[in-house]
Image 1 (tube, rainbow, N blue to C red):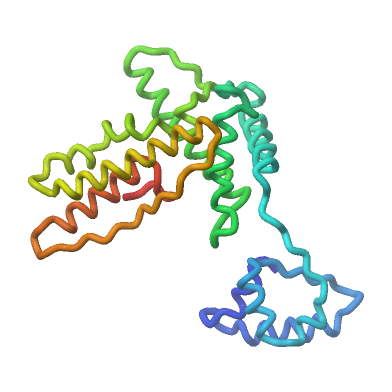
Image 2: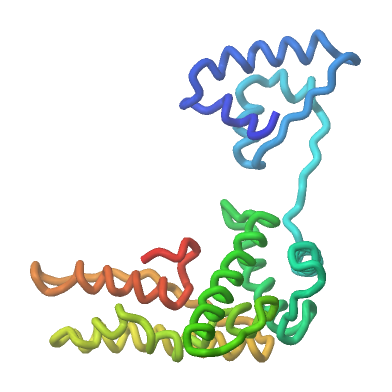
Length: 246
């Protein structure tokens, strides 16, 4: 039973009755039926709190650890090889610098609630292919003949922030607003720090922790909502939001 903890949720209609029935079945069918329950660790702890009898009837628990960077790299290599039949041409190779940066970025989410391991790896590669598709389209409409199986540094880890920000409509709009010099300088300083981290990654140094959270204060009509929307769009344009939305 996958995501078994949902039965113990207050939102599960009839969940308590199902759990009581399940507990009785586990007791009566020992040696006849194998019961496997799966779910996230924290949520499953609450599940077992539903009835102490579950602990004695299902004493064996296997905890699946998050994948290491080395394991994620191997998984990514297999994913790429399988998807492209060995024809993919990765700048610096499947064990090169840009793949290592991609995996390290993914690995920094390890331990955070919602971290998806293999699923997150697939999502990360989906973003790579989106960047590649955008580049291929641009190169074709400008007369180029790009290789559909080629993946560049920018495809893999995104463009340098200082370069990307110049193509951001939200960034350009922010610069046209009257006043707000302190706000503009603050956003520029953030971009500079993100650029510094990008360069540190290329040197295989750990990035400096940067908080993206901001509090906008001011009287009505001073532009808080407008700038807030522009700020969110700028973060999305820089690829700093997990869902890519501003």
